[in-house]
Length: 342
Image (cartoon, rainbow, N blue to C red; front, side, top):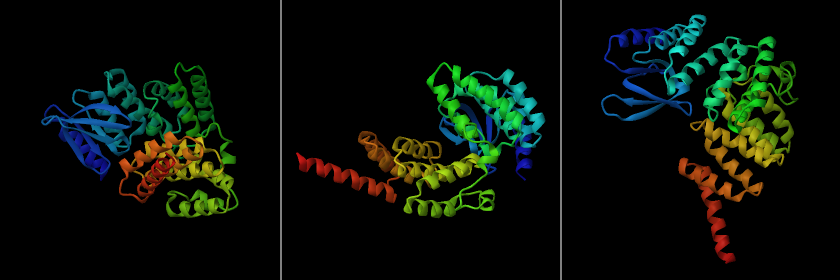
């Protein structure tokens, strides 16, 4: 049904007035707009009549049609029809016609996802390097996860060589960091795939292989590990889950990995993992809790100024949450204590 809707949208839009169109994965059509930006993993569109701007998450975009861009429109159509090999060829052609601004990054991101999910990570590697230079801050948000990439030792080996070499000679710290995060996401700096499939005693292999959405199962199990003082066990399991996860799994896994690091006394690392949840997955149910525990980790790591800033962000974004209420109490108590000491 979605493919038919996408095709109809393309055919109808082809005869419409000069404007861009975005079809979301909920089959909602955003029409009579101009795509003006692709940044922070979001498309920004401007209404052709009112001039009002709105944003659409990359993960929610199913198809775009851009006025005057026949090559890109053909590639998007082929992608919607699941003609992946033809879509790859079409996106490569579209890349040669991509104008300035958002279009080049969009086409490269589409290509990387198609190639990587098609088991051609080696062909995607050079594109990833270019994206690490162009969009280092949010590249990781638009890449497939390790679990979404078919296992191919030859392709992985070639991609590894390309990505590591590029990271080592990168001209900026931002690009190096982006490529390091890509390598981490792919599990390249971890043991080989066979070793990563081994699980700790508390989680049987069958449970892990059938694991799709952490949810209540991970929450309950991870809380039990922390209560029992088994931070190392929690870290081992979340590391295994991370290597095989699809994107929808990541907020919970990163949240509990951060809390495991905090319990192990690795406070800076804990804060980094927890803040990743809030930054990369701001709509996740784990976002508020991750900000709360990130502030706690920063406090324990003697970074009180940063901890206070994170608590303020928690209250600003999630003012109605229990975590925000507790954060306000903590800051209030500290202000009172400071006044009493004076």
